[in-house]
Image (cartoon, rainbow, N blue to C red):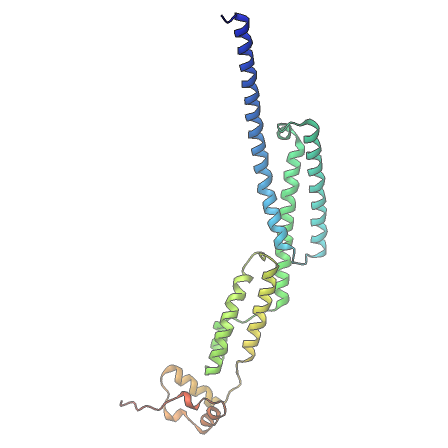
Length: 241
């Protein structure tokens, strides 16, 4: 028969296990909370470092980022030392060092984000501006060769704009790609002929409007079409057909 003392000892053991389990569950909760707080900021910081790495920050911005990065390292070392010393994750909840660590990380994130955006805009400005395809279409003579060049321009301009609209580049590849798109746009632009004889401009304007007649095919137009190999592009039809 189990004695009262034995039953008491059994109950005491169970209570001890229960207390340990409760402590373990509490520790796990604190670990999860601290991990989530840190990972949210650390993930954002790592992404920013990838995005800003290929950019050249302004000298003052670079100095500020370096300073804040040093502060973050110091705070991280203090938190690690205290955790190793006390071996109690709950202490991080009550310890001001943890709060300072999170603030230091957030401060670095905000500074790096702002500095990166400035550097990205500076890089885009160095590439130079590009005329929109719509504006280009309005002022260029609508010849077949110009239309071909404009289509090439539009494709490169669309690819350029997609990257230029980003708040920050996604990686170093974006800088390579956007530079290539600018070069392609300028090559296509160089193929566009703006200085055409007035008769040729009037001829193509009438073609596009659907109002062209033989009266538009002046000697100047016929000569220009022949020189540029465009005579075979057109067929004469009677309006009575």
